[in-house]
Image 1 (cartoon, rainbow, N blue to C red):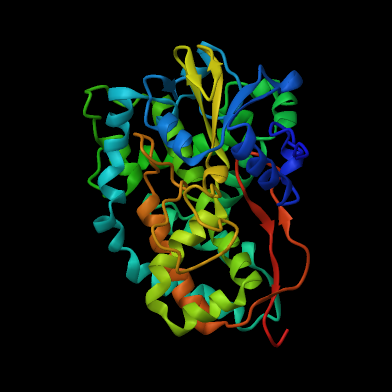
Image 2 (cartoon, rainbow, N blue to C red):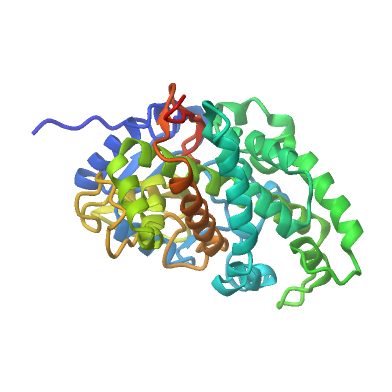
Length: 408
């Protein structure tokens, strides 16, 4: 049996074709479930964890695999870590305290209250497509829909600006861009757009502080975390930026990938049109298929043996959620897109640990409502050009999805 080709997972260029990383993940799961990846000049290297069960085990053990030393591949010193720390890079009691500030706003019961708004927004968004023979699905639908929901929750009106900031920040996940932005080393992703997000958030905070608003900004500035440690300005900055990026980017890419999957598998789209009751099950398959976040990183706090190898204390350990979502040990025929797939134990939001995505219920609701409105109103959407992908090994994103309606 020939040795399969394993691409350099530290190089975002290898993720642009939408094929190469998946072949690598397949090879690693089969033969090298714990794989050491050199990073050249961009870092000290990392361990890749690619099987579903191993990913869940790492995510479930924050004492051994900490988030405190950052959750992306970039390596930062202690001063940078403290300046840039958000809820994502916090473990233990402080993480729980920060999470609890907004947790009630993202429960299934709480987000269900947005369904009427979402359905009206989805109908307006979809109806605009009827008058366009050709359109970019990302710009017209995927980017616009979730940011409007987030803007409502933040009571922030500048939706296009929020989209632009999110795009600029995610683009800086490319290691080559990080190397070019040393003067911004203290900013999240070393992106200068972070400064604009901070300034915008501070203006909102100043307006809401001391008031009785129920929006997310008001709750951040007017509540004290359960550990009794108030949010410093830097804490608020990083929390607000996290909401802007995580609350928009991941859902928009899940929407785009779901649309592309339905175009590539028209039988599955027809099935959903005939039986809309399948949509909640379909949403789980959308998320598994999309895997909008390729990975998150942890750092080992002690030596750990795994698959006959030793992870040393201080080593970076990368959980490849995308690989786990194609693990044949969990998903029979994992490269079959199946909107009726039962027991869909996907990792799109993480699993098994304290960092499970806070916005999971909202993202599922957005996906369900959007496609319930889209599929019957605009049937037969087709590709009209080449799909353009985000150059990133962090976010599995689609930049442009050119489409046409049947009459186009």
